[in-house]
Image (tube, rainbow, N blue to C red; front, top):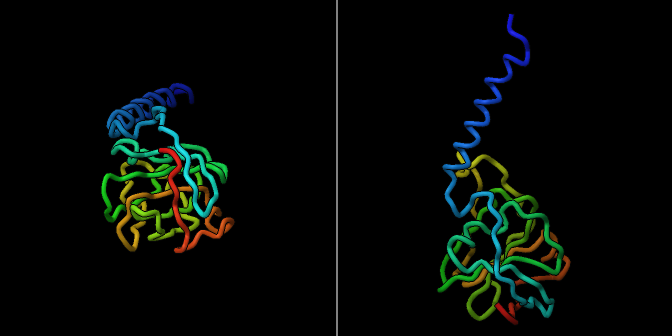
Length: 164
């Protein structure tokens, strides 16, 4: 008769193999490796924020994935080389966020509030919804959910870049 531990050993080995293969097949820019983002300072409605800057394709793909919730005085600023319709999704996020799209002059184009995380296996990532702005943007700011309400961010708000 097979003991319980003898039956579980092959299952454990199979799980380790499948998990290892899964990690090896992830695109390199979104693996669980630590990513260092450049830092900068911006203001929205004269509210200063320290931001992580996502200004390359790999850093924009990674975004805030796997990070812990940010304090209200921090965020991530996505910087694009030209104005366009840039969408975001919440794959592997750990907390809800507010998203604010800005044009090249710092005017608000679109706001999404209290967007929930989408923590699912990469194989079914297509199940995470995308959020598309109502107009072309050059910058997108991600902040902890509640920031927009707490600081009364509206379509009349302005982004001021201090240093990026």
